[in-house]
Image (cartoon, helix red, strand yellow):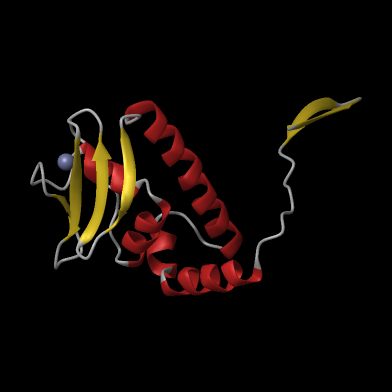
Length: 142
Ligand SMILES: [Zn+2]
């Protein structure tokens, strides 16, 4: 933020930064953006620049959510049918599976809106894959 003081008033201006992005990532991002333009438009994202900022926002928000709400969970890795999450609260690995219709369902809770599914959506690779399928993160219930 930059504060500009003049004789007619004071403004606070967001100062945009220019960053260098690996060209390989840019190509992938352009492809993802072009393949998901309609879904992104429904989420208020109408430009490639807005898309990159949307991803950054998602990563920042997800990190905050994970640290505040699920410090006892960690991502183990992808499996043949989904992904594995370690839940220290219950002392076990929980699998979240990708169902034929494309939804994520927790093996332990047999639901698509538990904290494990919420955690799965907060992993950027999962979020991007679900975005490509037109799926939205659930409203997580305890
Ligand atoms: Zn669960």
